[in-house]
Amino acid sequence: MTTTEGIHPAEGPRRAESDPTLLLDFIEEREAIRLRREAGEPPPWTTNPIMAAWSFCNVRREHDRVTRWIAASWRAPNADHPDLWFAMAVARLVNWPDTLAALGWPVPWDRQHFVAVLGGRAGKTWGDAYNISNGGRSAPKVKVVAGVLNNLWNRRASLRPRVGDSLLEFHGRLRTCDGIGEFMSAQVVADVKYIAPLRSARDWMTFAASGPGSRRGLNRVLGRPKDAGWREEEWRAALRKLQNRIRPDLERIGLGDLHAQDLQNCLCEFDKHERFRLGEGKPKRRFTPRT
Image 1 (cartoon, rainbow, N blue to C red):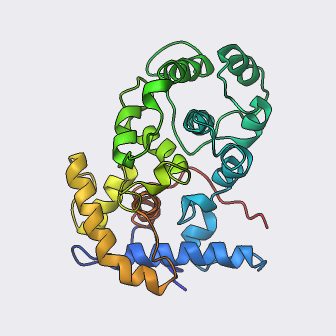
Image 2: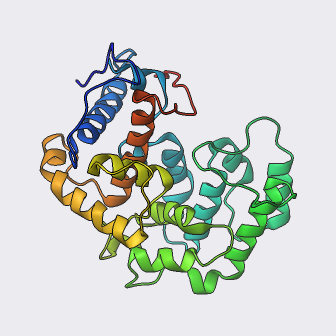
Image 3: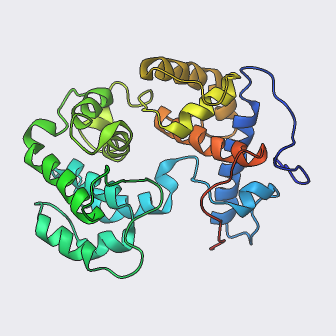
């Protein structure tokens, strides 16, 4: 079990350049926490004080609570629907199961219903994982998101996943839509890749799109300044090299089938961990143990 007990956030061992050891330690311990928790062991599930105190996503995105709800409630029952991808866009732009349950299956799209349900909810409406801004507009968030979804729905015939598509090709079509962008398009891809036709995509294991956290995380692993810039294609190439390099270590800990989108997410979570450990900031959410 990895531990940083007794280490002040600004302290800790220095790593050599291009050394994935700390990333692998983080991945191994985060997966171990999940397994201990699912085995029914009592909390705390780690001696790492940062991981015990703050919320971190699972190694595999499919194990996260919101993803499990989306997969069981919307994706699996509607796996053959040609516009399941649109429902996944709705799911990720909202990203909160209670709200999605109140909304109901969103195909065919009904903008007025969406605005009425979300606009009329009391308490928590949106998930915390993705920051969906108003893009500088003064309209309420629900109307801005409804506008983004309306655009996707109107273009659905040209956006749907196609037989023979790569994940990169489907992602490229989605990201041309105003308001969804590169990162959120990748979140939709991450859900839709588990059903036909994208589950046969030739880049199923290797496709990923970067976000700010995963760019910083990869910089840390490669020994670069944490805020050094990347061109997207260069970042993807470096991620593939890292994926190949650490595959034997991932196989050793039972994660040999970790695809690039999950590795991208691990880099983002690793960056959160390192920011706190090195005194550069802290995660947004405290961890509240639930069995």
